Image (cartoon, rainbow, N blue to C red; front, side, top):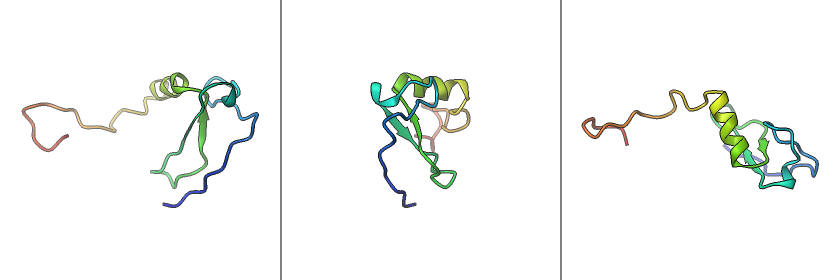
Length: 73
């Protein structure tokens, strides 16, 4: 899926806390299971992590690993 890479506006705000992303260590993410839509910007990994946790975005996205069960790595 091709996407266009652009630099966000200098005043772009963090999707989680509202801080200006370029005042920190910005991260840009896209949901490419949903047509790689517009990017979402976070000012740092802590805000991205909090957003993931609060929205339960990891539920069902990975196998539960067990050393006795084949097929999940």
